[in-house]
Every structure is written in C-alpha cells, then in structure tokens.
Length: 196
Length: 216
Image: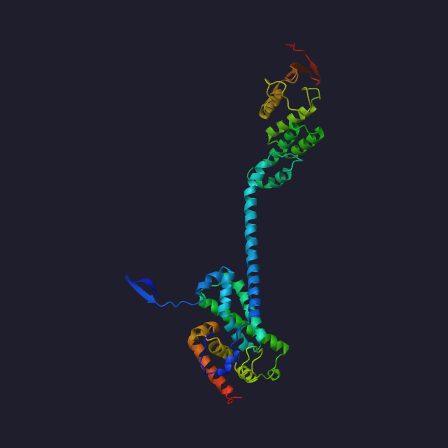
C-alpha cells in the first residue's frame, strides 16, 4: 500500500493506492544494469512458460527454444532503455517471443515448409520430449487466427491474466477478454470436432 | 508455470520444461551477449579518458616544446601546436622563428644552419616587428665575427667582458636610427667592447683602428 498526496482547490487529498509487487521487480534494475545474475534469475523464472508459449505458436520445440534464446539476447540490447519494473520486463519478453513467432510464420510462408498434412502423427499421451504437437491439436490451433491462437496460449498455457494479455497485445483489457472468449469457444468446437 | 483450468486438457502437452542442456546453452548465449554489450561501454570510457588526457596534456606540451629548436624531439609538437597557439598570440610564429635561430646560435650549431633559420625567420618577420628584426641582425653580426674574435667559437655567447652587457634589441634599433640621423660626412665611431679598441668608419665604408686615439 502506498499513499500519494495532491493539492486540489486548497485541500490536501491523500489517495491510497494498491501497488502489487511482481516477483521480477527485484531483478529489473539488475537487468537494466546488465547484471548476469539478474538475467539468470529472470531466465530461470520465465524460460519454461516462454518456451511453452512459443512451442504452442510454432509447433516445433527446437524452433521455440531458439526464439526464446533470441528474445533474451535482444533483451540484453534493449535492457538499458527498458522502463518499468518486473511486470514490464515480463511483458517485453512475451512481446519479443510473439514477434519472433510471427517472423517464423513469415519464414515458413516463404519456404512453404511444414504443411499441416506433413506433420507426423504423435502418440496420444503427452510426451515430455515431444518436438511437435499432436496432429489434432495442431490442426485445431492452426484453424484459429493468429490473435486467437496467441491469447489462448497466453491464457491457458502461460497462465497470464487478462491485464497482462492486453499489455502484450497492445489492446485494452476488455478487447483482450473479448478475443479470448471467441477463441475459447472456437477452439472447443474444433477440438470436439464440431467445427471443421 | 500456473496450472490453468481444465477447460483445455489437450493443451497440457504444450507445457514444457526446458531441458538442462538447452538451459545451459541459453544462459551461455545470454552471458556472451552481456559481455558484448558491455564492451562498447568500456571502449567509450577508455576513449573518454584518452581524450581528457590529451586535452589536459595540450597546454603542458605547448609549454614544454616552447624552447625546442629544429632537431629536438619536441620540435614537431611545437610546429603542430603553433596554429592553435596563434589563435591566442598572432605573433607566435615570428617569435618562434627568431627564438629558434637564437637557440641554435646559443647551442653552437653550424653557421649554415643558423643562417638558414635566420632566412626563414626573415620570411615571417615584417616591419611591424622591429624588435625581431634587430634580434635577427644581432645573430647575423655574431655569425660574421671571425673565429678568434671573442676568444672562442664564432657562435659562442659573448661572456668575455662581464661589465659590458649586450644591448637589448630595442636599444640596437634606437642606435641604428641615431646613426642614420647623424650627418653622412662625419666619421662614425664604434667601440668594440670585446677588445676595447676604437675603430673609425670612413665615408667609403672602410674601417681602421685608432688605437684608442680620437681624431677630435
């Protein structure tokens, strides 16, 4: 809890505001100062969820890992100019990974690689070492538009809040929730085989 | 990672844990990037230190090289800094050239070298610098003395007579003007202080000793 004071029409008004701390707040200054320890801490805190998000976006584990690595390398370049605390740091990394995935889409469209039909069938049970998504899930996610796919993964894989999703998409929270609701409904119908 | 609702259990297969070897590879790449990013900062800092040292060293070098003559280690620095110093002192080039000739004379340099310096100095010395003209004339006078005159090197400083002091350049200029003002038909007497002999200069320009006797 913190308080701010303002003088309005000769009357001192004290506003009490809730300031929620973020787990990465402690490392924001270290990242700005290019501290190796701070970067290591941020990487260990976010690597799994960032790689999972990228994996859901590009359906290829190795590519997802490379995208996340590249995002951290780009963070090193951008860190001295980075503003905000832990929340801003996390949003920056997610946006960077998202842009990395978009670049991968563009590369694939130029190369005409990985058509959906050629994705190999995977066993039903989730394999922790799997390098590609199951065909049904890949088809369902592929049927969503990129924005819908992004919000589904941010919400149901990375576990981000509506506010965080809105910040990553650069939209309002209400718009983010609207996209999420439509995406969830469409994905459910696709996975249930009701929407081909 | 946050466990989300079971609305989409199919998405569980997407949740991954980064393998240890991949994590090590990523952390090594991040460390490399940090080192690379810090390197330009260090280079910039070093550049700043060098620039500051140069700026501070400039006046020191200018002072140290002020008396340098051709052949000295600091002479090129003196020449290099001359345009900069001339912004403050426009006569610095004139002063330097004359002092170089004097410096070479004091150090007993070859007369040819000194004459060359005097000629170079005359290029920059103008009528606006009467003091410098007189100083150059004095150098030439001393060069023209015979080797046995003055009891030493023709370029050695005249210290044989402690009582007699070398006239200041301004005094010599005044002396020249006084001579020009005197009637041309009167013989001009000058005293060679080094040998304490009096000479008489006739109208034709010849000089003869008078052995201390005056014609009156």
